[in-house]
Length: 306
Image (cartoon, rainbow, N blue to C red; front, side, top):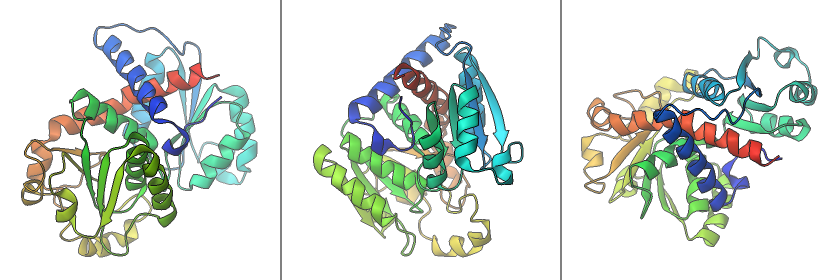
C-alpha cells in the first residue's frame, strides 16, 4: 500500500506512470468510455481548508471511476472537536477505501497516514501541493512542452514552490525560483531538492530577481501572494511583492514560445496581469481541468499498488 503525501516518496518512473494512467483515463472520458476502475469504492475527503478545484475534481473523479466521495469538513467530524488524529484515521480508514486530506500542517497528514489502513492523498498542506504538480506536468506533456523544460517560478516560497522543487529534482529539469527577501523557500526542502537534483541532473536556482529567473524560461508560473490563513498579511505582502507581478514586460524576457501556468485562483493585477492571464488562459484552464484527470490517474494507480 502506498500513500501520496509528497512527491519525494515517488520515483521519476512512478510519477510519469501516474500521469500516463491519468491521460489514458482522460482519453477514454472524451469519447464517453467509463471503465469503473474504482466501482463501489468510497473516498473520504477531509477538508480543514476549503477549495473549489480540489473538492470538485476529487468528487467528480471518484464518481466517474464508479465510486463515491464523502465530503467531511472539520465541522462535520470529531477531528475538529478534539478527537486524536490517529483515532479518526483508524475509524475512517476502516470504513472507506481511500482518504484525501486538505489541511494546514504536513505533520497532520503524515500522522493520519501512519494510522490509516488505506491510501492517503495530500490534497494540499502548507508545505506541499503534490496533486497540483501532477496536473501541471500533465498539461506540459499534453502541450508538448515537457522536453528541455526551463521553469521560472516567481512569487512566494510556499507549498507550490516546494512542490515544483521536488518535481524538478525528481524529473531532472531546470527550475529557477524568484522570491522577495524574507519569503524564500524552506531551507530543509531546498536542501532535500538539491540532494535529489544531484541524482537526476536537475538544475535548481534561487534568486531575489524575477527577471533573472524568467530569462529564456519556457514556462513561467506563479501563485497567489497571500495563501489561505495569511489574510491578515495581505496589505503588507502586496507592498513587499511589488515588482514580482508577471506582466507583459516580464514575459518578454522568457523564451518567445513560453507559456504561463497558474494553479488558481488568480488575482489579476497582483501576481499576474490581466493581459498575461487572458493571453494564456487556454493552457491555464487546461491545467485546471487536468486536476480531475491527474487525480483519477493517481487514485487508480494507488488502488493498483494494494
